[in-house]
Image 1 (tube, rainbow over the protein chains, first blue to last red):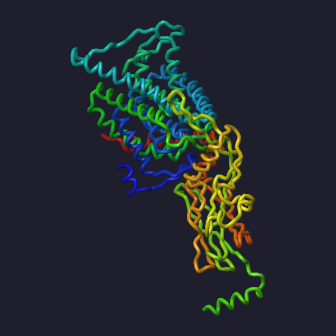
Image 2 (tube, rainbow over the protein chains, first blue to last red; image 1 turned 120 degrees about the horizontal axis):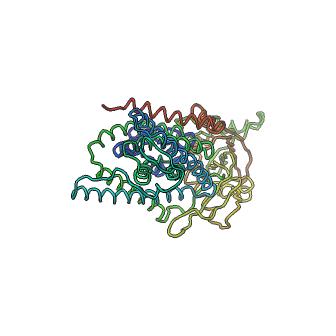
Image 3 (cartoon, rainbow over the protein chains, first blue to last red; image 1 turned 180 degrees about the vertical axis):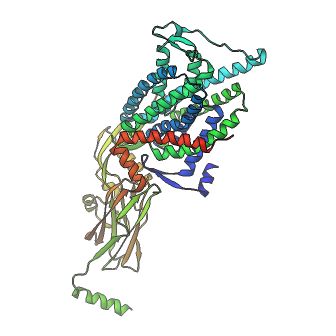
Length: 313
Length: 243
């Protein structure tokens, strides 16, 4: 479908950093589709975008760096809307971002090292398989359980849960989130998301949101806004570091994807309000698992060509 | 007509040393713009003596800038296909093409082809790293399939026995730099005349500007990317806002 459409209306555009020409309409279309899904499910969509770019033949280094750059653009308006409504816990966000910035620095170093070793493609795929596989599995299991629970008891959830995270030192009072917890768990969560953001070219919202609810015990009202704050800051940091250290940010690619992405997100969001929470999460989990499975298949099957050539670094 | 031609060749030696071979390119500058999808350059010219079977033959050889490349071989580690051993080719042409009125191996002895680097087999491919002959073959195959190395993509066309032309195709992945085109006249398995031509591939317009800023001032470029994406995201959400 996309291919036949592209045949009729094809506008080849040269990506100056990727050093290749790609169909602009195809990129806008991919951006729209991913934006639509992300609007539907309320996630950033970077975890779909980067693998699709790699499948289209964009080099992994460009796909990851430009994916992070696109996620930054796609998250800005959401953050502004949430901030206007007062749904951002800036204090908690600040701690998460502090961890996230350190994580993004570490992640880009790891990425640059993997590139020198010639293992970027496989490493990005393995990160995706492991992270998306486990997150997707958890999402599906959790939402299926919730759907069954609802059928039996009606809606029920805990407001607040006390976990091991409450026993650590360096406690701070987070007024907005009504929490008095150690800064170590949010720093750690921020750090891990930062590393993943740098290596996978994602915002990490799909992992950050559950971590904020289940590990930090934040109230759901401020979770989305605060996670968007972290996503915007960390993807900005990843964009910056990837651009100066690896040189993979292709602004033409980013802007074409954003053009489709912001339009698609608005359509998806207006449709998503009609879906129920658990069903949405089960669908999203299935989608995440499908992406993980296709990347795993690429790692497992005998490659079409055993050899690859690239410029020496 | 026949008489006229015969008369012409009779008079030829008398005139001031006519060139055995004249060749030109349709352009000396290839611009990589944001709309670049590859380009064809016409290599054309004429010869003194008739071309074709029994007569003279022409070979066209084009070479891009040299560069280092790494060829990697995938190996299976615990069921996963990862990049394993690699070989580094220090100095090979980024772009290479050769074509003739007939394939070069039919026209010239191997020693001459090797000396002049005519034919993909004659490109010196020194490499360091993994010691296996497969790497050299893999580099050639990958370069050929991406059309960055071409050997006899199509024969040089002959028109009216003294005019020849060849369409040199540059794929969109071609690198900027200066390219050399050598047109050789072959007679009796010897190169009797050579024309040295050249063209430049360069980025122009916004593609050039973006690339220049990205490599020359990476910090500025990084900040611009952050601002541009942020602004585009915000502006887009205003434009496409529904309800």
